[in-house]
Image (cartoon, rainbow, N blue to C red):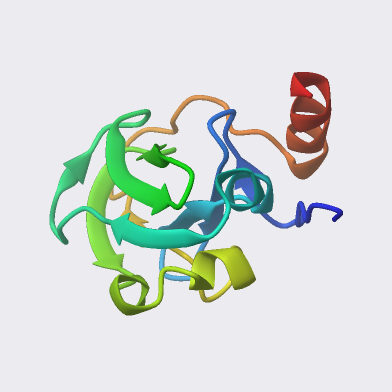
Length: 131
């Protein structure tokens, strides 16, 4: 099955994606590659709204029938919202990782730009090279 890597998102080497929202927040989720590697997701633990995150900090956990995996915040900021629908239906990440399967929204406030995020082409190349 071919993996989706939408051009309009940015990515991390730990397989998270970032979408800039019109209100200045960013939406974060895990990539199609990550959800395929994990398999059928059965549980998602997300950070509390209001939690301050550092870029690169472990902030959520996704658990599949195969393994549990930490999710790292690609950006620094305050958790403004989380996708509570995933508590009931974690498989949304499997069926729609770039849409209904989003994990959280982060308000970056005046946080400085974080480390480099990857473009879609850079991420696709990274995944290809990682094998």
